Picture 1: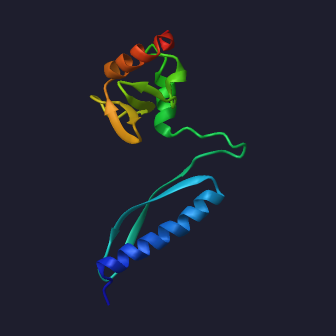
Picture 2: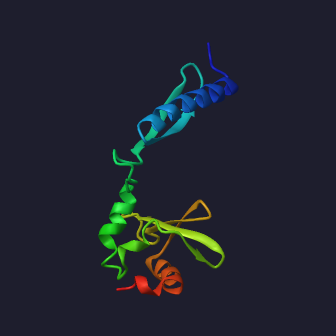
Picture 3: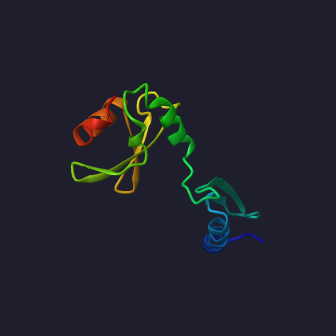
Length: 135
């Protein structure tokens, strides 16, 4: 017997709700990947990432760790990472560096939406708001 689309959506919501309780217990973040429906319901676990350590401190993502490694070669202090600032009326948080992206390697959030930009654009944003962050 096949699962219908609504049954799969309902099951997915229930699974996600159950996983969120586990994630809160272990200070982790769990997201589900794509779900297929038909004769067999297949759901992939997209990622499981620890968000804070045993002392309650926030754990950096792999992109933020890469940016922390690269930040001195870009001519900036490492205070730029994960620090919100207002630029042209938007709240900007520089979150990481994507090593595979050649054109737009800098990852940031603008009003809780994820975006990418070039190194020059990131330097322009930081220079206007925080000129003291330049080495």
